Amino acid sequence: MNLDSLLQLFVVKEKRFFPLFVESAENILKAAQLLLEQTRSSDHDDRRMLAHRIKECETRGDHITDKIIDVLMDAYVTPFDRDDIHELAEGMDTFLDNIRDASKKIAIYQPKEPSKKLVEVAEYIQRSAEILVELTGKFDRMRQEAREMDNLCDAMKDIEHTVDDIYESYMSNLFEFEQNAIELVKKKNIAQALEDTSDSAKAVSSIVRSIVVKQG
Image (tube, rainbow, N blue to C red; front, side, top):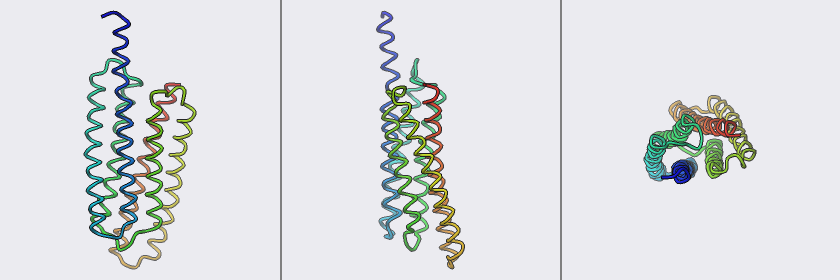
């Protein structure tokens, strides 16, 4: 095999990461959309059904992460640092796991009624997932799209700050006005799970920003 053919082989190998990260992000977005539906629902069976569908997304996400690790183990040349690829794959997996954890709490606790503020948080989680799809779609032209990717990372960070404000307001009102202790605990745990999900989305954006800076 001549040098040109060998280099071409390496290029093909490294490009396998890009569609896998896009697939992972699209799967996270699907789970986030289902979570938003779940936070809006007051039907117990509907909440359980949506939690089951999110569990299916989580299982699919685990398979995608495994594929990324398999490609990483096999690749001679990677599009960016091997540790960064691993960290990003794990960070995206955590984002999805947190979506699943929030959905599971909703299905188990079955709060009496949907909360407008928690629906709003779920809307922001979905928006973070949409931005992640945009970001991963730019991985194959990262240097050319560096500025736009940095702006998208800023948008995810801003979302997390907004969610923090909503969470603090919600918790303050909850402890002031909720008279039913059982409902208080249910809503508190669901709110915490949703806030953790937003935090994990921001963590993914920080990993992506680090990669973009290194590639610049």
